[in-house]
Image (cartoon, rainbow, N blue to C red; front, side):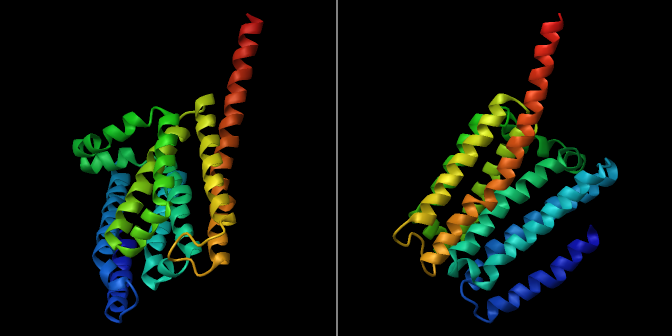
Length: 268
């Protein structure tokens, strides 16, 4: 873990700094928000690594956390090449990686014991409101839905493109919304959980369809209609797969538990 941290600091950050001085579009202005994001990720990553020494984690959870962190680093690097400002499809990939890949992997890793082992009660105090809210799957689904639609309206989407600080706030909102949603649905296998997953699958698919079939360019980073249509298809199809898989997984457990309960009462 420490080796990974050192390599990323020694290679990624200086390389990005050189790019900023070379004048790549938008990188200079985005350098400070990028640095804050990267340092925050590294702090949580190192906390998990230290905590895992005190409270060992299952190997599959350890892998899930580290894979999620590596994908998060790659996601942060996407804007540095100017790709986000030039392509709606690349920007959509960044958003979908945050919401549908990184956050569910983090939640599957269940890193709270390791973080608390290092950070103590401040970590508990910081996360307690999110844990309380996550008890209600439909509430978390509605919250994530509002966040997704808010930041994909043309006005606020373009605002995030124009200002790196708003871009950072956008990603924090998307990450927090996805965090409480996935924590809620992955810890409960009930009919309400299934409904929350299907609701999310429905409204994200609807937004993807709107982007795909829109007759005018909606975002400033769209190269052309094909790029905007590709962005819509990314949200509509591949980004929906994690939600669909989770819905199938939840329904199988729910139907199994329902059949067991019916059989119990029938035998009684």
